[in-house]
Image 1 (cartoon, helix red, strand yellow):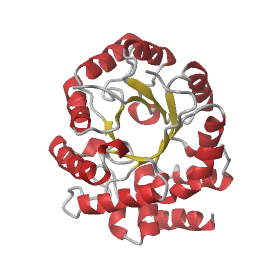
Image 2 (cartoon, helix red, strand yellow; image 1 turned 135 degrees about the horizontal axis):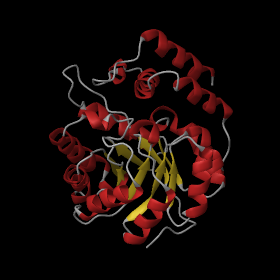
Image 3 (tube, one colour; image 1 turned 60 degrees about the vertical axis):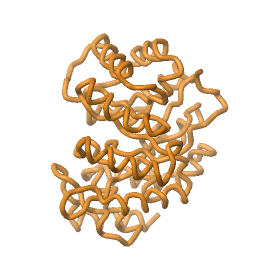
Length: 290
Protein backbone atom coordinates (compact mmCIF):
# COMPACT_ATOMS: atom_id res chain seq x y z
CA UNK A 1 0.00 0.00 0.00
CA UNK A 2 1.37 3.42 -0.96
CA UNK A 3 1.31 6.52 1.12
CA UNK A 4 -1.96 8.21 1.96
CA UNK A 5 -1.47 11.77 0.57
CA UNK A 6 -2.82 13.14 3.87
CA UNK A 7 -0.37 11.14 5.98
CA UNK A 8 2.88 12.77 7.02
CA UNK A 9 6.11 11.16 8.07
CA UNK A 10 7.09 14.02 10.38
CA UNK A 11 10.59 14.81 11.62
CA UNK A 12 13.23 12.14 12.15
CA UNK A 13 16.54 13.03 13.73
CA UNK A 14 19.49 11.94 11.58
CA UNK A 15 21.29 11.41 14.83
CA UNK A 16 24.94 11.92 15.54
CA UNK A 17 26.88 9.08 17.17
CA UNK A 18 28.84 9.92 20.33
CA UNK A 19 32.11 8.03 20.74
CA UNK A 20 34.18 7.22 23.78
CA UNK A 21 37.87 8.12 23.99
CA UNK A 22 38.60 4.52 22.93
CA UNK A 23 36.62 5.03 19.73
CA UNK A 24 33.66 2.82 20.59
CA UNK A 25 30.05 4.01 20.46
CA UNK A 26 29.01 5.64 23.74
CA UNK A 27 25.64 3.89 23.91
CA UNK A 28 24.32 5.44 27.18
CA UNK A 29 25.12 8.92 25.94
CA UNK A 30 23.55 8.12 22.56
CA UNK A 31 20.31 6.88 24.14
CA UNK A 32 20.07 9.95 26.38
CA UNK A 33 20.52 12.12 23.29
CA UNK A 34 17.85 10.24 21.34
CA UNK A 35 15.39 10.64 24.20
CA UNK A 36 16.06 14.39 24.21
CA UNK A 37 15.36 14.56 20.47
CA UNK A 38 12.07 12.72 20.89
CA UNK A 39 11.11 14.97 23.81
CA UNK A 40 11.79 18.00 21.59
CA UNK A 41 9.41 16.85 18.87
CA UNK A 42 11.11 14.25 16.68
CA UNK A 43 8.69 11.49 15.75
CA UNK A 44 11.55 9.04 15.14
CA UNK A 45 15.34 8.74 15.04
CA UNK A 46 17.57 7.50 12.24
CA UNK A 47 20.84 5.92 13.33
CA UNK A 48 24.06 5.27 11.43
CA UNK A 49 23.36 7.51 8.45
CA UNK A 50 25.75 10.12 7.09
CA UNK A 51 25.44 12.37 10.15
CA UNK A 52 25.75 9.29 12.35
CA UNK A 53 29.09 8.27 10.78
CA UNK A 54 27.51 4.92 9.96
CA UNK A 55 30.23 3.98 7.49
CA UNK A 56 32.74 4.09 10.37
CA UNK A 57 30.83 1.66 12.61
CA UNK A 58 31.31 -2.09 12.23
CA UNK A 59 28.53 -4.65 12.01
CA UNK A 60 29.00 -6.16 15.46
CA UNK A 61 28.87 -2.80 17.19
CA UNK A 62 25.89 -1.70 15.10
CA UNK A 63 24.01 -4.75 16.28
CA UNK A 64 24.72 -4.15 19.96
CA UNK A 65 23.78 -0.47 19.78
CA UNK A 66 20.57 -1.13 17.84
CA UNK A 67 19.47 -3.74 20.34
CA UNK A 68 19.87 -1.20 23.16
CA UNK A 69 18.16 1.63 21.27
CA UNK A 70 15.15 -0.45 20.18
CA UNK A 71 14.76 -1.80 23.70
CA UNK A 72 14.63 1.76 25.06
CA UNK A 73 12.82 3.76 22.36
CA UNK A 74 10.82 1.01 20.64
CA UNK A 75 11.16 -0.21 17.08
CA UNK A 76 8.36 2.02 15.81
CA UNK A 77 10.53 5.08 16.47
CA UNK A 78 13.77 3.70 15.08
CA UNK A 79 15.19 3.72 11.55
CA UNK A 80 18.69 2.85 10.46
CA UNK A 81 21.00 3.97 7.68
CA UNK A 82 22.29 1.20 5.42
CA UNK A 83 25.68 2.10 3.94
CA UNK A 84 27.30 -0.73 2.01
CA UNK A 85 28.44 -1.62 -1.47
CA UNK A 86 27.96 -5.41 -1.24
CA UNK A 87 24.38 -6.64 -1.46
CA UNK A 88 24.83 -9.10 1.40
CA UNK A 89 26.29 -6.42 3.68
CA UNK A 90 23.42 -4.04 2.90
CA UNK A 91 20.85 -6.73 3.66
CA UNK A 92 22.63 -7.72 6.87
CA UNK A 93 22.63 -4.12 8.13
CA UNK A 94 18.92 -3.82 7.35
CA UNK A 95 17.95 -7.17 8.84
CA UNK A 96 19.19 -6.27 12.31
CA UNK A 97 16.60 -3.50 12.52
CA UNK A 98 13.85 -5.29 10.61
CA UNK A 99 14.17 -8.35 12.85
CA UNK A 100 13.78 -6.07 15.88
CA UNK A 101 10.56 -4.55 14.51
CA UNK A 102 12.15 -1.30 13.40
CA UNK A 103 10.29 1.34 11.44
CA UNK A 104 12.44 1.35 8.34
CA UNK A 105 15.80 1.54 6.62
CA UNK A 106 17.50 4.34 4.73
CA UNK A 107 19.11 2.52 1.82
CA UNK A 108 22.01 4.33 0.16
CA UNK A 109 23.30 3.29 -3.26
CA UNK A 110 26.56 1.27 -3.53
CA UNK A 111 28.80 4.28 -3.02
CA UNK A 112 32.14 2.61 -3.82
CA UNK A 113 31.18 2.30 -7.49
CA UNK A 114 30.94 5.42 -9.65
CA UNK A 115 29.35 5.98 -13.07
CA UNK A 116 26.70 3.33 -12.45
CA UNK A 117 24.07 2.85 -15.16
CA UNK A 118 20.39 3.06 -14.30
CA UNK A 119 20.08 -0.66 -15.01
CA UNK A 120 22.96 -1.51 -12.70
CA UNK A 121 21.61 0.66 -9.91
CA UNK A 122 18.13 -0.84 -10.24
CA UNK A 123 19.59 -4.37 -10.12
CA UNK A 124 21.62 -3.58 -6.97
CA UNK A 125 18.69 -2.02 -5.11
CA UNK A 126 16.44 -4.91 -6.15
CA UNK A 127 18.86 -7.58 -5.00
CA UNK A 128 19.47 -5.78 -1.69
CA UNK A 129 15.74 -5.67 -0.93
CA UNK A 130 15.22 -9.28 -2.04
CA UNK A 131 18.01 -10.34 0.35
CA UNK A 132 16.30 -8.69 3.33
CA UNK A 133 14.08 -10.69 5.66
CA UNK A 134 10.53 -9.29 5.65
CA UNK A 135 11.56 -6.04 3.93
CA UNK A 136 9.43 -2.99 4.65
CA UNK A 137 9.79 0.72 5.18
CA UNK A 138 12.64 1.11 2.67
CA UNK A 139 13.59 4.70 1.90
CA UNK A 140 15.93 5.18 -1.06
CA UNK A 141 18.68 7.69 -0.26
CA UNK A 142 19.71 10.45 -2.67
CA UNK A 143 22.97 12.06 -1.48
CA UNK A 144 25.16 12.53 -4.56
CA UNK A 145 27.58 14.94 -2.84
CA UNK A 146 28.77 12.02 -0.69
CA UNK A 147 27.96 8.84 -2.61
CA UNK A 148 28.67 10.29 -6.08
CA UNK A 149 25.78 8.06 -7.21
CA UNK A 150 22.65 10.09 -8.06
CA UNK A 151 19.22 8.51 -7.72
CA UNK A 152 17.41 8.90 -11.07
CA UNK A 153 13.68 9.60 -11.00
CA UNK A 154 13.11 6.70 -13.39
CA UNK A 155 14.89 4.22 -11.14
CA UNK A 156 12.64 5.27 -8.27
CA UNK A 157 9.61 4.62 -10.48
CA UNK A 158 10.85 1.14 -11.31
CA UNK A 159 11.62 0.33 -7.67
CA UNK A 160 8.21 1.56 -6.59
CA UNK A 161 6.51 -0.66 -9.17
CA UNK A 162 8.66 -3.70 -8.38
CA UNK A 163 8.31 -3.46 -4.59
CA UNK A 164 4.90 -1.95 -3.79
CA UNK A 165 4.40 -1.49 -0.10
CA UNK A 166 8.12 -2.03 0.52
CA UNK A 167 9.61 1.10 -1.01
CA UNK A 168 8.07 3.68 1.29
CA UNK A 169 9.79 6.81 0.07
CA UNK A 170 12.91 8.76 -0.77
CA UNK A 171 15.24 10.82 1.37
CA UNK A 172 16.43 13.71 -0.79
CA UNK A 173 19.61 15.29 0.54
CA UNK A 174 20.81 16.63 -2.80
CA UNK A 175 20.15 20.29 -2.00
CA UNK A 176 18.93 20.89 -5.57
CA UNK A 177 15.41 22.30 -5.77
CA UNK A 178 14.98 21.33 -9.44
CA UNK A 179 15.49 17.67 -8.50
CA UNK A 180 13.29 17.96 -5.40
CA UNK A 181 10.50 19.50 -7.47
CA UNK A 182 10.65 16.69 -10.04
CA UNK A 183 10.65 14.15 -7.24
CA UNK A 184 7.56 15.67 -5.65
CA UNK A 185 5.71 15.83 -8.95
CA UNK A 186 6.51 12.23 -9.92
CA UNK A 187 6.12 10.45 -6.59
CA UNK A 188 3.37 11.96 -4.48
CA UNK A 189 2.37 8.44 -3.50
CA UNK A 190 5.66 8.06 -1.62
CA UNK A 191 7.03 9.76 1.47
CA UNK A 192 9.40 12.40 0.10
CA UNK A 193 11.71 13.43 2.93
CA UNK A 194 13.98 16.44 2.57
CA UNK A 195 17.36 16.51 4.26
CA UNK A 196 18.43 20.06 3.36
CA UNK A 197 16.84 22.47 5.85
CA UNK A 198 17.03 25.31 3.33
CA UNK A 199 14.55 23.50 1.05
CA UNK A 200 12.38 21.91 3.71
CA UNK A 201 9.63 24.53 4.12
CA UNK A 202 9.21 24.94 0.37
CA UNK A 203 9.10 21.18 -0.09
CA UNK A 204 6.46 20.79 2.63
CA UNK A 205 4.28 23.38 0.89
CA UNK A 206 4.60 21.34 -2.29
CA UNK A 207 3.67 17.94 -0.94
CA UNK A 208 6.70 16.60 0.96
CA UNK A 209 5.96 14.31 3.87
CA UNK A 210 8.66 15.32 6.34
CA UNK A 211 12.38 15.21 6.94
CA UNK A 212 15.31 13.19 8.17
CA UNK A 213 17.89 15.83 8.97
CA UNK A 214 20.87 16.73 11.09
CA UNK A 215 19.67 20.01 12.58
CA UNK A 216 17.07 18.15 14.61
CA UNK A 217 20.00 17.03 16.79
CA UNK A 218 20.13 20.48 18.35
CA UNK A 219 17.07 22.55 17.34
CA UNK A 220 14.16 20.19 16.63
CA UNK A 221 11.61 22.59 18.11
CA UNK A 222 12.67 25.31 15.70
CA UNK A 223 12.09 22.98 12.76
CA UNK A 224 8.50 22.22 13.78
CA UNK A 225 6.89 25.21 11.96
CA UNK A 226 8.69 24.21 8.77
CA UNK A 227 7.28 20.69 9.00
CA UNK A 228 3.79 21.60 10.19
CA UNK A 229 3.10 24.79 8.22
CA UNK A 230 5.83 25.13 5.59
CA UNK A 231 7.09 28.27 7.31
CA UNK A 232 10.40 29.62 6.01
CA UNK A 233 13.22 30.27 8.51
CA UNK A 234 15.89 32.53 6.92
CA UNK A 235 18.05 32.45 10.03
CA UNK A 236 18.23 28.68 9.99
CA UNK A 237 19.04 28.71 6.27
CA UNK A 238 21.92 31.09 6.93
CA UNK A 239 23.24 28.72 9.58
CA UNK A 240 23.17 25.88 7.03
CA UNK A 241 25.18 28.04 4.62
CA UNK A 242 27.77 28.66 7.34
CA UNK A 243 27.89 25.00 8.39
CA UNK A 244 28.66 23.94 4.82
CA UNK A 245 31.95 25.85 5.03
CA UNK A 246 33.14 23.23 7.52
CA UNK A 247 33.03 19.43 7.67
CA UNK A 248 29.29 18.99 8.24
CA UNK A 249 29.12 16.10 10.72
CA UNK A 250 31.82 17.45 13.06
CA UNK A 251 30.05 20.82 12.84
CA UNK A 252 26.73 19.34 13.93
CA UNK A 253 28.48 17.48 16.73
CA UNK A 254 30.05 20.74 17.93
CA UNK A 255 26.61 22.35 18.09
CA UNK A 256 25.17 19.39 20.02
CA UNK A 257 28.07 19.68 22.45
CA UNK A 258 27.25 23.36 22.91
CA UNK A 259 23.51 22.93 23.35
CA UNK A 260 23.88 20.06 25.82
CA UNK A 261 26.90 21.48 27.62
CA UNK A 262 28.60 18.12 27.09
CA UNK A 263 31.86 18.36 25.18
CA UNK A 264 32.04 14.57 24.75
CA UNK A 265 29.52 14.85 21.91
CA UNK A 266 32.02 16.76 19.77
CA UNK A 267 34.36 13.81 19.23
CA UNK A 268 34.40 12.41 15.67
CA UNK A 269 35.60 8.99 14.53
CA UNK A 270 38.45 8.66 12.01
CA UNK A 271 38.72 9.47 9.20
CA UNK A 272 36.71 12.53 10.31
CA UNK A 273 38.32 14.92 12.76
CA UNK A 274 36.79 16.79 15.66
CA UNK A 275 36.08 20.37 14.60
CA UNK A 276 38.75 22.91 15.52
CA UNK A 277 37.85 25.15 18.45
CA UNK A 278 37.90 28.33 16.34
CA UNK A 279 35.54 26.82 13.77
CA UNK A 280 33.25 25.50 16.50
CA UNK A 281 33.18 28.96 18.08
CA UNK A 282 32.09 30.49 14.76
CA UNK A 283 29.22 28.03 14.46
CA UNK A 284 28.16 28.48 18.08
CA UNK A 285 28.19 32.25 17.71
CA UNK A 286 25.96 32.07 14.64
CA UNK A 287 23.61 29.66 16.39
CA UNK A 288 23.34 31.88 19.46
CA UNK A 289 22.61 34.85 17.19
CA UNK A 290 19.43 33.09 16.07
